[in-house]
Every structure is written in structure tokens, then in C-alpha cells.
Length: 392
Ligand code: APR
Ligand code: PHB
Image 1 (cartoon, rainbow, N blue to C red):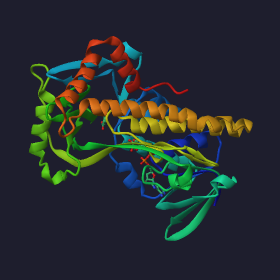
Image 2: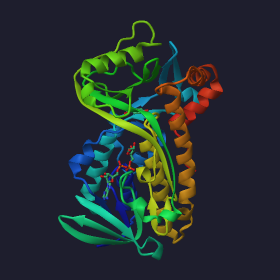
Image 3: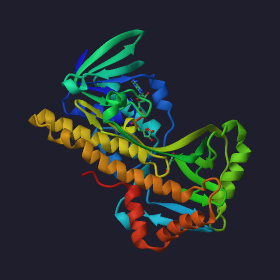
């Protein structure tokens, strides 16, 4: 098989890029190792920056997002027995939208299967060869057979565990990485959210987050030790701990709504950036190139901003023959990636309680939070990052 752009991975990055290319009249093929049901059910953060919403609308994936997405004007920070609301429109003129990644993937897959270029499920990329020769070839296995996708350009949108990153020779790769001494226990519950906006709480016993998927489905998270087995957390224990952490600093009369838990998972956290984002005619985007801890929900937004840059760059190449924007992609993408990496790291370290934390470090975290509550400038910087920096 031959195409112009070979895309590995049908997560949000690969699917959105394919849609952008298709609308620009550029041939592409998407290879996805899993099946459709699997990629449409994967639970991930669902907080969209305005630029992400705009990008989805621009490819025709805005109808359900506009009907069902929940526009949010702020978030609440609870810490040290107090509560502070960060007002996004007042500080930045922008808002954010709650719409689950599962729904974005469903919307993009439906568009793609209706009129899009080939999207092969159960097609596992094994390796990318020839990126530096100018004729990349993606070797993959589909329906028990090995085959090759020859392309002008290969794009690795295959997530953190994909194969594309490995095509950059080890001697030319630099990896920046940091782990965290805690994980998130996340639940989905069939109950109305207890607050109209997201609540990020730094309780004395650790972090808790109240989020939502819809007016009738809550998404909640608790900081737990690394290696935690979800089986050790019966529903009652989870609700009690959420209640304890979220109630600190809540105003009088606030209560946590409890309901049936429909999903329960533990996710470790890491910050990771792999450079370069380009090797010859192979480009990397989204989780294949970088991972952030989920605090602040930057992962999906970064994946989308990467492919917005790539979409523009391929369109320019197609129209004018110039690779100038593709040449500029690594630098432009990495600028945003590093800003979001710093923001996610800051938000994570400011809101969690690592095991054995010293009194001094605890006061430093609280002091950072108090600064956001006390200073419009500090709140505006926080809000600018949370709602998303503009694309270059
Ligand atoms: N061959 C084909 N497909 C592959 C391969 C492979 N060898 N390896 C992985 N994949 C597929 C995965 O099955 C997955 O569907 O690549 C896709 C990668 O999708 P994501 O992991 O969702 O990554 P991305 O599209 O970059 O989106 C980033 O994921 O981690 C979250 O918060 C993050 O929401 C953000 C999003
Ligand atoms: C989520 O709803 O899953 C979510 C929201 C905000 C975050 C992280 C996760 O910061």
C-alpha cells in the first residue's frame, strides 16, 4: 500500500490529523493496533481548551460537542481550610469545555468511516524504516499478515507505548523524564456532579478532584500511593476519603453526592518529553512524544495542538511545495509542550501531598496556592495556562 502521509495510531492525535489532511485533499492512511470498541471506550481527561474546541469544529466534529459539551467559566481551588474560585473569562477572556475524550474519538471515527481515507483497525505498526532516506516505510501486521505502507511522510501518533519514537536512532534521542510518588484512583459514578465547576482540593490527607462527564455522571479522583490495588478501595472507602478531602475548605452546606460507581482505575503519573519530534520524514505528535501528569488536563490539548501545527504544515506543503512549516514544527510544538509540562508539574506538585513531606515543603505548596488566591497577576498566569496558550 502507498499513501502520502502514513499515520500510526487512531487516538485523538491520529484521528484529528487524518481528518485535517482529508479535508485539505491530502491522501493518508491510519493504522490502529486496537479495535474500534476499545479506542472508543478508553477513559481519559475531558477538559478542552478553546483552541481544541475550535480545531474539532473546524473539521466538522463540533455538532455533538456543541450540543453536549459543558462550557465552564472557572474552577475552584480548595486548600488550607479555604476555597478560591479562578474566574477564567475575567482573567483571560476565555472559557474551557468539559467533553469526554471517548466522545471525541467516537465523533472523529464516525466522520472518518463515513467519507474518510482508510482507517485500519487491528493493524499494528511494527517499525518505521527509511525515515532519513526520504522514503519512509511502515511495516505492520494486519489480519495475521505482514505488509508495508510506503509513504512520503510518516507520523507517529501511537501514544507513549508506540513504536514510532524508536525509529529515531538512540544516539540522537534525548529523554527528559520525572516520576511522581503517587497515583490517581479515578472513578466514574452515576450521580449528578456535586459542584457546577471542577474542584481541585489539596486536603491534609492528599489531593482530590471533582470533575464530571455530563449533568448526571461524575468523574472523581483521589491521590493514592503508587502500586495501589483498586480492590483495596471499596466504594464506601473512596466516597469517605473524597468527602474528607473535598469538604476541607468547602463553604457551609456543601455536600458530596454519592452514587453507583461504574468504573475504578489507578493511574500512575509521569512527565516525559522525548526530543527530537522529527527524524527525516518521520514526525512525532501527542503522547508518542510527550506525557504530562493529568493535573490540569493538558495531555489531550497538547496532542491536538501538535496536530493543528502539523495539519497546517502539510496543507502548506500541498499548496505551495514548501516544507518551511514542517521544518518549523518541532520548535513550535516543543515551545508549547514545555510550557504545558511546566504547568502540569507545578499544578501536580502544588496540590499533592507526597509521602514524608517536610513541614517546610508543605508550607511552600500552600504559599503557592495562597498567592493565586491573593494576587490577580498570579491568578491570571494560572488561568492563562489552564485555558491554554495561543498557537504560534
Ligand atoms: N500500531 C498502531 N497503533 C498503535 C500502536 C502501534 N504499534 N501503538 C499504539 N497504537 C495506538 C493506540 O492503540 C492508540 O489508539 O495509538 C493510539 C494512541 O492514542 P493515545 O494514546 O490516545 O495518544 P494521542 O492520540 O497522542 O492522544 C493523547 O491520550 O494520554 C492521553 O491525556 C492524553 O488525552 C491525551 C491523549
Ligand atoms: C477529568 O475530567 O478526567 C479531568 C479533568 C481535569 C483534570 C484532570 C482530569 O485536571
